[in-house]
Image (cartoon, rainbow over all chains, first blue to last red; front, side, top):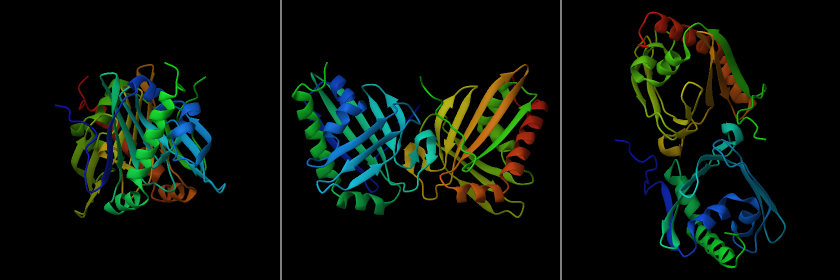
Length: 163
Length: 163
């Protein structure tokens, strides 16, 4: 029997689960297209000024966040799994081409499932140590990831992601 | 055009390339079967006392090396890519289930290609910093990886890996 590869450890991991009323195809597109991702992926009034996605295992997921004061924060990582309409796994522990990253922090798993005309959405942040989980929690994981998910749903509902 | 995902950087990476006269199918099996791996994967007289392979992206590659003096050294990591007869990618920057590892060091890529009745074999150790590459070189990368490759070829030639 093959066990699921992702196992949530409440001491180490953070989970956001929500049922959203937009179709799984559009959620997938919003997550995997640079022109869409930059519109919802950081809590406003922050913005994304650069976004480079190479959607395959080992491919880059790089983006630059800009604060309202104009300070820029580059983020680099890579995709680990890309299963259309089902699962995206990314990590900042590895850069493009699986090169070890200078400041590893966590792996992100996005699980999607069709739910009537909507989507069951689950995001998991996987950490290596309890301290990293706590730090992420204090940085505002639940608020932040919840806010950008709401932004994504509104962005899709406004008709920005063509079917 | 899709570029290759693995790009070697001579400042950061270490490469071992060799043409070996054993078939690619047996090399793949020697690399992916615990009962075989433990016979050749560390330079003798070191041994492997435990070996747990979960051959899929995110699956564990865990093994314990034992020195001639009896000291044990556990190693943990996970597979990133599993392409039968072609490519294996593993890393110690992530544990099973893509969990960030406590002591990240490098990613290993094993590229295989059929070469007549033999195999073109390329192993790449990918590091994040020049210092890590240097450390790995001083630890004896070329000797060590070369020695175990020779051990693998001898193990296969002795008929230990059934066709």
